[in-house]
Image (tube, rainbow, N blue to C red; front, top):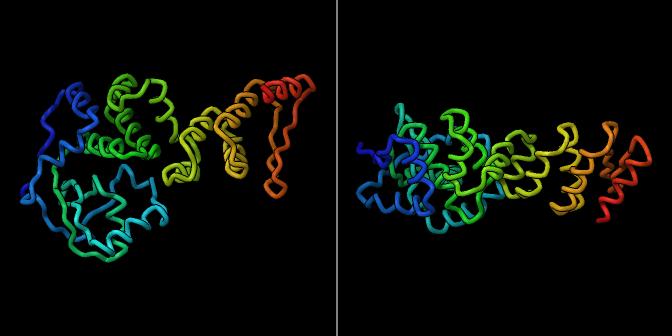
Length: 265
């Protein structure tokens, strides 16, 4: 089988320059013709090992399944062939949908790239979407940061974001898995998650559940988290979901008044 080898650069700076372009995925698509398409059994294609933690909820692929039922699988999947295995690179949600619909042979563009290049292709695809999946982005950036020793500045250049934002995105993976799954399925926002990164670890889930229940804005949640950081160590938050209430206990009256003053600004 003939595979596509699209990545020639070995120099890290050259790779960063190439994959920081907003049209990189389009450029990849232009490099194949109909002759490159191979039909492969759905069941031979594995989920991507870097993104398998980012479980896709059923609701997220409902429209994709409807489209496949009406039109079939006409858009090729991008897969990496390595160690006699196929692994999805581009088209992960569509792959799951087609498997659930028991589609057999599906059109694929087969690549043969190393793990570093695969990560960069994944990153390019994630950024190519109108709504960037921030959980998936965090997973990929963390792999580049830890496994390939990318510096924050290099990651910043790669995704065209500030070093501060890159640091926030990297730290998303420290949040509880329940929150990350909600983020990956658009059930919460990046702004909420970014705020929770700075909350006390033992209170993250309390804050998240309350913010979700009360539909708090990012700004309101930021006020609570920042105030928690400033008051005494005995500051405690009790969430009563049944009565839709938040009970905050302070060590002294000074902390209470300081909190109220900040909250009313």
